[in-house]
Length: 258
Image 1 (cartoon, rainbow, N blue to C red):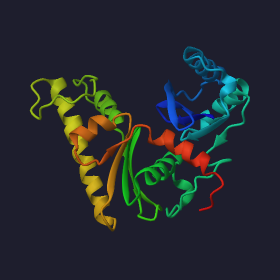
Image 2: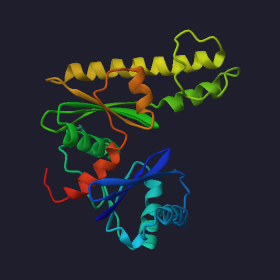
Image 3: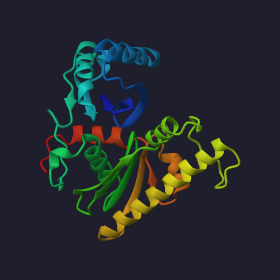
């Protein structure tokens, strides 16, 4: 069976193709609020052609999204190019996790997907840190319940704000300079970004763990997870495919009641 999973984030749309249990391909497209169904469809079709796969080989499609404005274009592309009506988490596909947020509808689909995937892969209790456009820290109980967490600006947003608001500071590449004492403006900014952000993450995770009974595992995911897992050695697991695995698991468990 071939399953196409699509994670629509604020910065990128990530596509994952599963052949049975194997994640056979991953590719990304930049997220644009005005993206058309043909842009999505042709881009995806080109990747399938390169891999030597027929579009008709896809049995089902699952979408998780935090950008509602893009959902229609992506869904239309799936219907037009793959001939499939997609499952969309939160619309026609329910994430079977007990959500203990005070207002459950406020929780983004990505947070629930990550929580569900991490619990099924690693057990609980858990703290999951997703380094995306926003950085989120999620708490999951030993029983697999979604408890809540924290949200704060992603590091790239913070650096972009610094570049825009400080006239003499340049736009920099986000990389670990390997030192705390920067010897140039760029190196100083890189050291401040990586070490400062890593410290904020470590402090946040430790506070969450202190509120969780038992010994919680920590999982890092998202595009910058490897960088910050190295800078803040508090993570038991770095799992960059967590959201795609979550979409697959939710699809497979779609008939399981909470």
